[in-house]
Length: 327
Image (tube, rainbow, N blue to C red):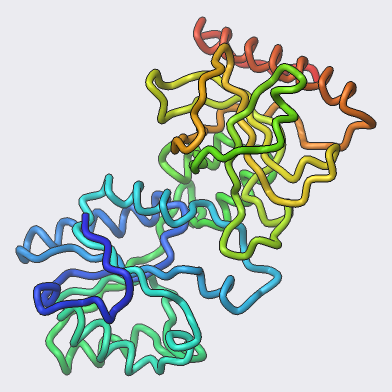
């Protein structure tokens, strides 16, 4: 899969394509339906399939305090898109220039001159351009003028309810991993590069692989995480996978943490993995993150968390029904 960073890097060889546009946060079942149609049409026309997306998300760029937590960061999204036969991703830096670009100019510069679009798939509520003045009617008029077809994908539903990134965030916030997984079509994962931390976990006997999970706005706190708390997780990306683990995601209130952090204690494993990219797949929520009166109290709770995680994994291995664990 080719990644093109910015429309100014489009070349004549990129001309002629089947295109869809969107944030694709989470790449959930609704997105997957779009990608399936994109791939089928690209094969039918003998053209490359192209996903046009943005970084950062528009709401993040405008500093919207209500901007939703990301389900997937850019690298995770790219890795997921690779699974769905996408030939190219055109990543458009969402900056002042793009935010002020009129909708008609976006069509002319990006879709017509840049990509030479022959077939365009968008959501039924898609808006674009300066002040979001572009809509599917404008795209269809442009299609008639320039010879490309525009298809709007209708809402994808499960059990009569729309599949959306918002529904997935709501499920994750309430610890409902089953519903989130159903909407995603897979268990929810977070990924990142293991970085050096303050070594507090190692000092109390529970070394952790630390991954910063902030987005482009580093001042975001726990309220902008897609989920928080302590979880039993499977860990991928190491020599043996999956490996069992316990993960805490949040701001570590007991030690007055400020940055959002994913800390993964891999059970029965203590190798040097700094700089490695790993993925944590969230299996069961054990408890909420909370402040403890001191490190000793935190340590005792971590011991209980590890015991509960081990019990969860043992029951899963045995094929038993998973029951709620005491906190």
